[in-house]
Every structure is written in C-alpha cells, then in structure tokens.
Amino acid sequence: MLGYTCVGTNDLPKALSYYEALMADLGPKMVMEDEGRMRIYSNGQGGMLMVTKPADGQPATVGNGCMIALPAGSREVVDALYKKAMELGSADEGGPGERMPGFYGAYFRDLDGNKICAFHMG
Image 1: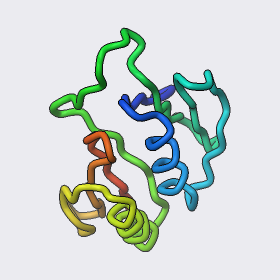
Image 2: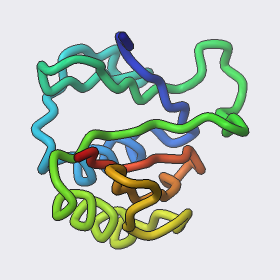
Image 3: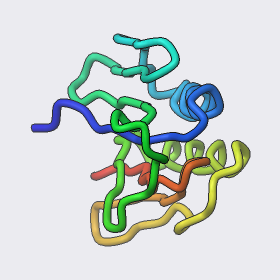
Image 4: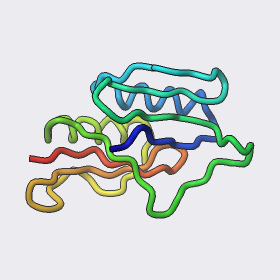
C-alpha cells in the first residue's frame, strides 16, 4: 500500500550513517541517491525509506503523530533493533514488549527526533 516514507534531517551524513547502521540487519540497499540531498533504501519487499533534507530548504522538523514502522520479522529482531538504536544515540519512546495480542513492538526516536517503531506481528 505504501510506496515510500520520508524522514527529514538537518545533518544528512550523520542521518545516513545512523540509518545504515540501524537497518543493517534488515537487508536494505540504496536504490536511489541525489548526493548531498537524499538517499532511498529498499529491501525489495515493498515500501522504501527516504532520508532527505527538506525540499523547501527550511529546517527539518518532526511531525506530531507521524511515525515510521519497520517490520522486524521476529521478536528477537525487534529487541536487537531497539538495542542498536539505543547504542546509536536514539531517544527511548518505549522498550520492546507486547502492546496488544499479536503485536510486539519497540519505539524510539532517531537523531533528528523522528519516531520509529520496530515491530513483529504474530
């Protein structure tokens, strides 16, 4: 249903380093880049993630109520992604756990304050 999701950043090199380290175990590859402006990642299984400077040249800000959800494939991968996010300097928004029957997730914010959920259903 989704083509891609964008996260804005005010420090593109730092954000790219963060996302490459965070998502290494999910298997994404860079599929498009406008050097110095944006990069798009995909694992070939659906939606993509764009890390970008805002197109209007204004500072990137965080949207209230906006969140990116990364399917992790298992509870163990959720736990590992959360741990890695904390090691990379993320802000905690709720450690790993079952939020409702069949939904296991962990919540954190990237270095620019964008909210992320690593989750597994099943």
